[in-house]
Each structure stands twice: as structure tokens, then as C-alpha cells.
Image (cartoon, rainbow, N blue to C red; front, side, top):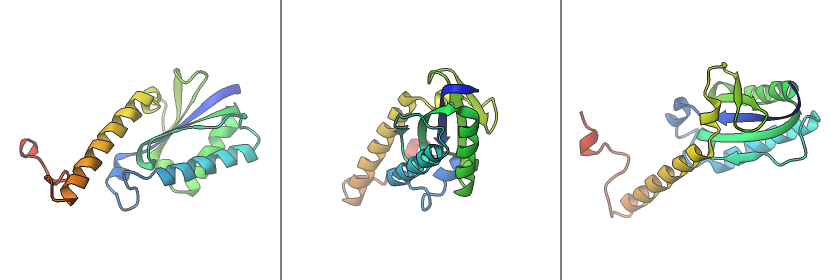
Length: 156
């Protein structure tokens, strides 16, 4: 698994979404800090290529991609850093040669890394988040219904 490869990290799970006090929906600061921490760990280990890592999404549903020279070592470094932060159980890690053909290495090989690393999926999430934020702001101004309450069609 040596040569120039890409390590993909997706961070997010339903458990994170269920705990908004710890993982707020718009936590872009947290994901930037996480990316920086992983980036520096890979640079320290001298397995990171001289390319800035890709980042998209907030902490509770983000994807990061790191171009590395030793994928095996990089995966172990990333797993170790995520474990120290108690985030490994919420993350999926994969490896690719071209950002299209992904092979998941954590938690198991059946994880759909291509879908998790999709920019289209991230853009859709961003659109839905922005729409919800707009509706929430309208509610707080007294100009609309609470977007967090169940809609009439949602009740069963």
C-alpha cells in the first residue's frame, strides 16, 4: 500500500446528531481543528505529501482527504489521533488512488466510502442545513413555525 495515495476520513454518525450539545450541526471550527490536528500528525510522521488536505462539512458529517506517501502508516496515525479524541468510533477511514475507487479500512471493508466522500452529498447536506437554519431564524423572530417540531404530515 505504498506510493502516493489518498486517505479519506469521514466523521459522523447518528449518535453525533443525537447529541447536539457536544456536536452542534454547524461545528465548522471543530472540523477545522480536527483537520489541522490530523494534518500536523501526518506531517510529523513524514508521510504527508505537500498538498493541503481537502475538507468539507461540519464536524458531525465531514469528510477530509489527505495525500500521503505511506498509506499504511498514515492510516495508523489517523486512527491513533482519532482514538485519543474519542472520535474513532464515529469515523470511517478509507484509502484511494484517485478519489473515486475507495476501499474502506475502518471500521470494515463494506462501508460505502465513495458515498461518504461524495462532494455532492456534502453539498446536499449544506443546502438542507442552510434551509433549516433560515427556518429556525424565522421562528426565533416570531415569523414562522418551529422547524424542530413535527409537521402535520410527519405525525403518525
